Image (cartoon, rainbow, N blue to C red; front, side):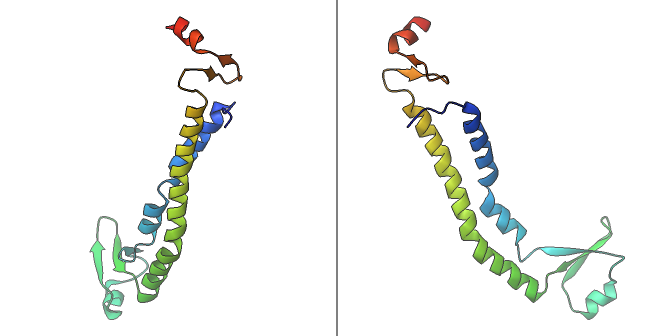
Length: 133
């Protein structure tokens, strides 16, 4: 493979991949069926929650109730997890593969004798590197 002429592309790709490498945990956190929904005191009363027989707890510091999701919301989150997890795993795996591939491309630009090319594709033999030391 040819040596990348623009190292900024490699740096950009690497940074982009680190953003994507957390897709699976992100999806699992966003679709957690056991999390509680925040409801402000102004939107509902405690008596209404008790009448609906919803599991909840009161947080006076945030002026809100935290109520358990209903069955449909839980089903929706489980469904999203089931459908989105394979896609997220593929994204995470692709990120790792591309980082490794970028490292391999960089390694192939210099062989074992330290015969290297710089970003201008100028060839430097092993004697050049010995003189630099």
